[in-house]
Image (cartoon, rainbow, N blue to C red):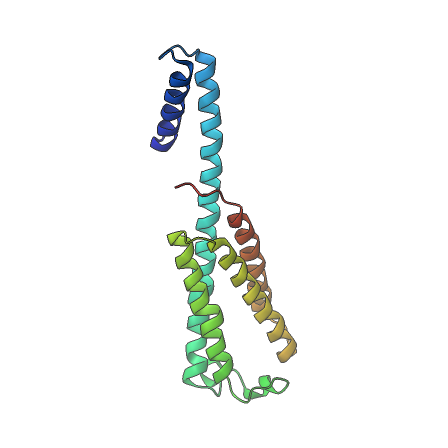
Length: 179
């Protein structure tokens, strides 16, 4: 039995004994019921740890890949470093990859890493930040497909990342705070 479960169980049992006025007069069935309730609460906490861990991993993947993809676009706005011709931008309002690279860096790189940090530190409302980042990457992909008029396998991957982040974030917004 882990420490938190044992602590919760012992505190609750002590409160029950004090309420009854008779220390140590609890039946074995009472102890089993208390242990089962505490175990159920603890399993929910473990599930949320797993969900938070997955969210942190996905946000870190998104942030690192966005930062790595934005630097070549900013360093060489012609797209030559990434073997992307400027003709890709013919239906967009951009003439070079500089502005898209900066937006990619800030919206999907920095913001994702900030959301991951918020999840690690368990900032108040961090689940909503995860949802927001999922919406940002989903919107980015939709706009990119619209402007480029081309779909590649990476669009599907990052659209899935966005949907996963939205789902995980919604689960995290329902997490009960234990302090």
